[in-house]
Length: 402
Image (cartoon, rainbow, N blue to C red; front, side, top):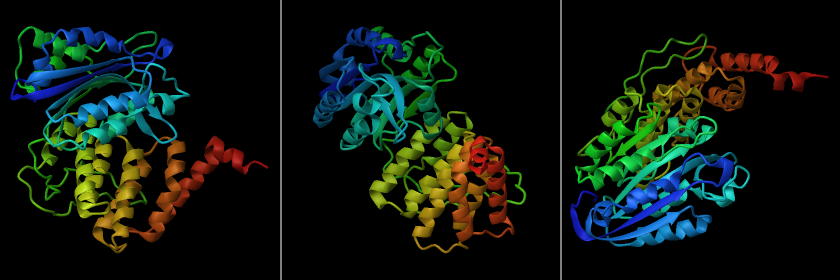
């Protein structure tokens, strides 16, 4: 539990990994001596503790084996991870780089983040704490800003992710070092409180700080609450974008949506996205793909992407929500279906990157043919803009050349 609340035996797994050579963005292993100087009982929050340390591991399968063994331990588990995150461009998945990782060997030499999430989700909720201090490559950073870093329901996550440092600079795991220094000085308040203190010390105003503790929430309220929507200027001749309509579902003792919205409106978009994705995962496991609950959280994520000023991601998610509702046999003129397509259309019109607009245009046209909406000319508006993009973009010019 951390903070000495548990009298059973706990496990702390310390992972510090970064590529060797010029691909290194963070001096990950420099956090280990500071953490090693902390009493094991503090690292685990238990009277008896087992500490496992992985310094610059090279093989993802070996790391997975250690994570699996730690996750199988019966007592509380505290996982400390410092290193750098990369994005696999083929599958668009986040990976934790290891010592031999290079951009071309990423898929074979790095640890997929979903491997870690998959092992931890098998544990009993409330028994796992993950503390991170990570640097993300530019493409991974863009993904994390709007989609967050997801582990799963019932797992406490504290720490930070920062964008890549300036060229020829190596970042320091300042968050983990500050945390360990506080513990060594005898300071041991509740982790949420200590996180706030350490986050202030760690600086880096552009960092993504995570403070996720939903272990006490039994089930998410899938929403009688609406996400407050900033007024849209109606695109011409496209759709208006009314406030999202969330469908009622089972009540819960605590609704996570207000906290998610508070994080988003405070500019903590990655934290908000992480929470929403976590609850979407809960809904998928509990109610299944295509359920009202799962679609609810998909729509929440779509609007969070809008708040994070990522119209491409918001468009993709709104189209996915519309497809999911149609797959539930909701008719094309259902207000929830029309609303999802209208919002996807609106976000597509907000796109200022021609290549992304060209990529998302065809599936939007297909949706618009099926769900034309209540405003005349929506289908024609998408087709007209696509024609303009094709005629003005380099790719389009090449394709029309004799």
